[in-house]
Length: 269
View 1 (tube, rainbow, N blue to C red):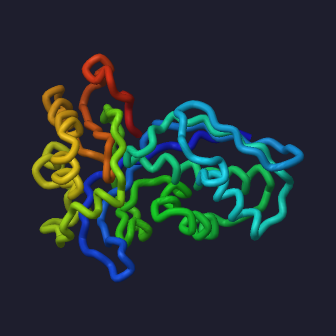
View 2 (view 1 turned 135 degrees about the horizontal axis):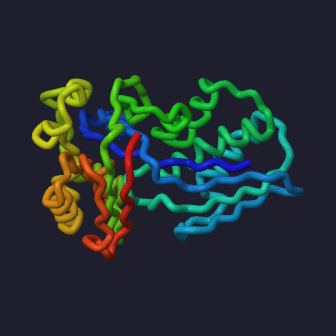
View 3 (view 1 turned 60 degrees about the vertical axis):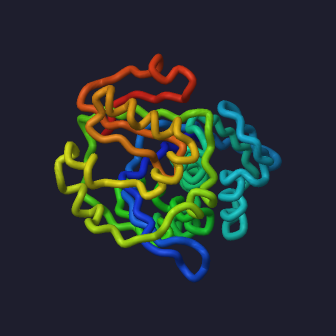
C-alpha cells in the first residue's frame, strides 16, 4: 500500500511568548500544499527501511517514519513491514516533510494492517512524535497555537492561486532561529488577517523569524524580494526557513530565475 505525504506552509508566524519549559508559544496558520513524498509498506519477514530521493544524513532508526512505526508496535500487533520512503520534500525548509511522513506512516499502517485506530487516537500518537505531526492526520488548514500543537479549524481556501516555492542550499536550525527572536503579542490576530483579501496580507501578515534569519542569510530575504518582483501577491518564509513561497494569481515557471535552488511551481487547492 502506498500514500503520498504532502508538505505544508506557514501563513504568518508569531512568536508570542517563551514558556517555562524552554519552548515558545506561537500562532500560525498551517496550510497543506501539494509537494509530496511517496511512502509504501509491504509485508515482509522483518522490519526494514529503505529511502531514496533527497538524501537525508540520518540513521534509519532515527527517521521519524520508523519512530512512528515503533510507537505503533508498542500498542498494536501487526506483521513485520518493509518501508519504502522516497523523499521529494526538502528538509530543513520549514515545510514539515518529516512530520508529514511520520503522520502518514501512522495512517498507512492503520489502513494496511486494519488496526481500526480512530483519527483522535492517531492525532494523540502523532503528537508524541512532533508538535506539528497531528496536523497531517486531518490535513486541513488550521490556526495553530501553543507550541504549534493546538489546532482550530479555519475557513480558508487558496484554490485558484498558484504557488512558487523556492528553497536555497541552506538549512536553518530551528533552535538557533528561536534564539534570535524576541517574543511579543501580535497587534492583529492571524484569524482576522485571513478574512481580508490576500492582496492586503503583505502589509499585515508577518513571520517573526524573517528579520533575524534574513540578517544571517541574506539570500533568503533576496528570494522573497524576487518573488514580489515576479508578481507575487503575497510572499513569505515558511516556518523558521529556509524555504520561501509566493502566491500568484497566474501560473509561473521560475526555475531559471532560481536555477541554484529547489523550485516547485503549481496550483493550490
